[in-house]
Image 1: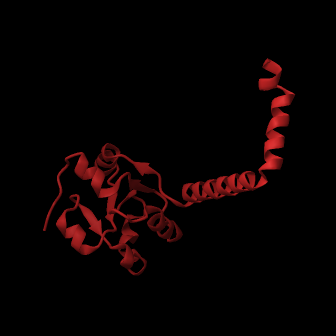
Image 2: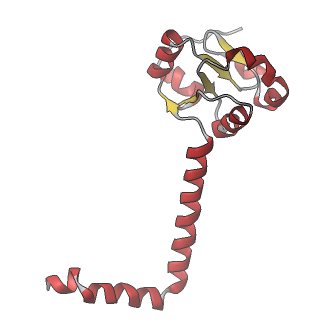
Image 3: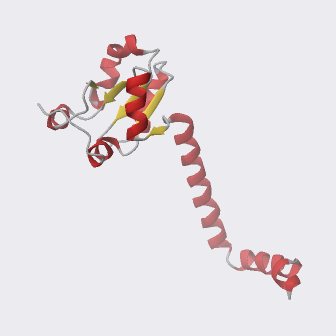
Length: 151
């Protein structure tokens, strides 16, 4: 019985299944490959996530810059104190504003539906190395009931 569960007959059953249902096996391999390549791409391009608490520590201890890439309207409705607002749509043209901050950590703050890894890729290509993103973006800051500045 143990041989049929762990041994050669079990391997033969797996091979037989793969031969009979090659379409399912092919679909599984393709989906797995796509998933792994996406994860690898995000790991290589994106900035690691930091929690709200880690964000506060980076800002206080390492003088980190909080880059808010939401549009101006959302930024005005509520933002974290000392945030620098450069909307993602304008970041490519205004990236020079961050040149003085190259040696400081930059934490990317984003809104619902925005992809922080696209911001990180743009910043990495411009020579910024110490990049992070606020896990959950501005919503996580709000959920932690930390203060927001509203204009």
